[in-house]
Image (tube, rainbow, N blue to C red):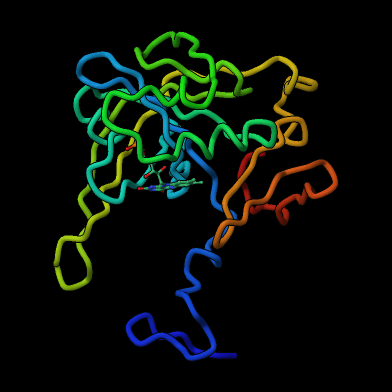
Length: 208
Ligand SMILES: Cc1cc2nc3c(=O)[nH]c(=O)nc-3n(C[C@H](O)[C@H](O)[C@H](O)COP(=O)(O)O)c2cc1C
């Protein structure tokens, strides 16, 4: 084993292994509207679900990017599911486009209306979470120094789901083919042959 000190690194590693090790990370493909109503779409892999009842998601913005600015302006966002068939489009929407540029158009994607929030969802995606801003948190490091990351927490108020991914009243993860981020430029995809089920020990609780 080697020990990688976050301050000084280690000669056997060119890069900090952190991002490769906390992986795979889900991708929140965030759609928003700016204050003038112009759509924006971008992927965030510092993204996750952080609770249920209510369902809450978060994404972390490295600085004041358009998605964060738009959420602050409007209080709403949508998390679209990034899937195998949409991988190229997802990637295109990460381009550093100017404010007001519609990344749906840039990537050849279709905007579909949401129900409870104003930003459009990605029509081609099999799932989308409509979210209302709960709070943002500006991160500081352990010395109290402000760092660039700002975390957005949103409550999920509605879910769009393609009927084709529902089997026996449940979401079939093998049908979604969700893509997730690994280290470097690597991704993984959830396919039926890589998915396994495991029940918890008796009495451990938890829901499936
Ligand atoms: C798979 C993937 C994951 C990303 N995750 C993040 C992230 O978690 N936080 C972040 O600030 N940028 C992330 N980016 C970069 C943003 O997508 C990129 O800066 C984008 O231009 C931001 O768009 P916006 O300014 O319209 O919000 C990611 C890019 C890719 C391709």
